[in-house]
Image (spheres, one colour):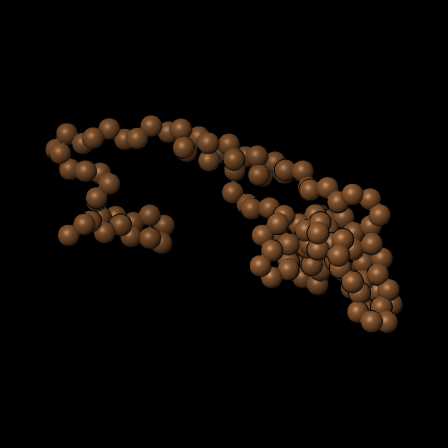
Length: 118
């Protein structure tokens, strides 16, 4: 499942609700609603950081006046959630008749390898 975008501030675990963009030619910092896509030269911010942001000395700060609302879930998120629920609800495989535990078999799953206990 794709995780929601998080605040760009170091150590902040909150969900992003605003986007900070610097307009260097005009010496302006703009804090607006969350952009549809993460861009390389913008910063996603949570509401507390978006509200408390200050511009560098000599710069103007343009801030969105309304409330910052979290973005609605996308269909990708809903499909991933439905797949996760289906996977969790899938019944466990029945025990093998030869008595071997299927959990302790050697095998590969993607880039991981399962090693049986010694």
